[in-house]
Image (tube, rainbow, N blue to C red; front, side):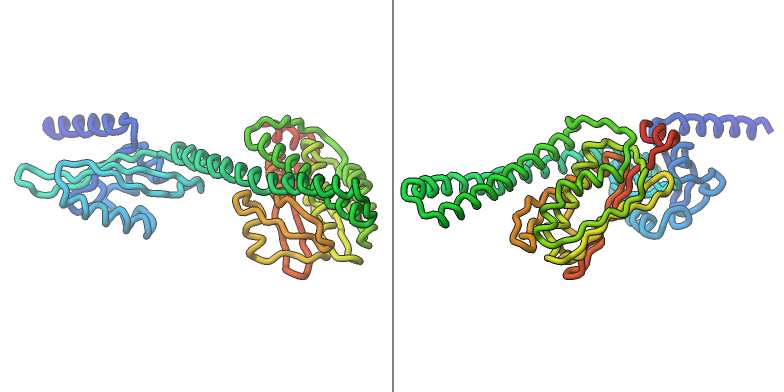
Length: 374
C-alpha cells in the first residue's frame, strides 16, 4: 500500500508538472496511443482526459489531420534525438481556425528500442495572420504604384498631348475639331480626377486615416439626394430610376461613406445600362440589419468578371454602354466602406441580364448602436 501511495503521489506530481508547461503537451506510447497529455492540449482538442487517454490519433483527430500526424510519427522513428517541426491547420470546437506548429521527437530507451512520441504544440495563428496581412499590404502597395504609373499617368499624358493639339486649333480654329478636342480633354480630366479621388479614399481607408463617424440617418432621404445628382445622367440615356426604399428607414453608419457607396453604385448602374433600361433600389428592414438592393437591367457580368470585381490587384474596368470610361475602383471602395460599417456585400449578375448588388447595413436602434460601438 505504501508503495502504491508513493506511485500515486509521483503520478499526480508528474501530471501537475505537465499541466504547468506553457505549451500544450502530449506523449504517445510505442503503439502511438495517448499516454500522457496536458490540460492545455485537452482544451485545444475540446475533449476530456478520459476521452483521449489510451486512444489513437485516428480516434481523436479528423481523417486528414490523423493521416498527416501518423505519417510524421513514422518519419520521426528514423530520426533519433532530434525535435522536428510540423505545420498543421485545425478548426477548434468553437469553429475557430488555428495554425499550429507541432514540435515532436521520437523517444528511445538505452537499447535503442522505440518507446513513443513526445511533443509540444505552438499556436502560431497570430503570427500567420500578421504575415498574411504584411504580404497583402505589400501586394496592395505594388498594385497602387501600378495604377498610379499606368492608369493615372496615361490619361494625364493624353491631356498634355490634347492641350498641345488644341493650342494649334486655337491658332487655326476649325470649329468642330476644336470642339471634339475640348470634349476629350474634359472626359480625360474627369476620369483622372475620379480615379485619383477614389485612390486617395481607398488608401486612407486601408491605413485607417479616413475619419469614421457613425450616426443615425434616413436611408431613403440619402438615396433621394443621390438620385437628384444622377437624374440628368439617367435621363440622357433614357434610363428610369426608381427608389423603393421605405420612408423613415433609419440606419446607423458613417453617412459620408454610405453616400459614396450609393453614388458609386448608381453611377455604375447607369454606366452599364442601355437606353430604355431600369435601375431599382430597394430595402428590406430586418434586425439587426437592413438589406439594400441596387438592381439594374444592364449588360451584367460574366463569372470571370465577378471573381475579380473586389480585387484591387485584378481590377477590371470596361467601357459603359455609351463608351463611358471607368476606374475599376468603385466597387472595391464600396466593399471597403460597407465592411467598415459592419455590413456585407455580394453581387449577383449574369452576362446580358443585369446586375443586383446586395449589401447590409446596421438598422438604427439603441441595442444595435451599442453593439456597433463595441
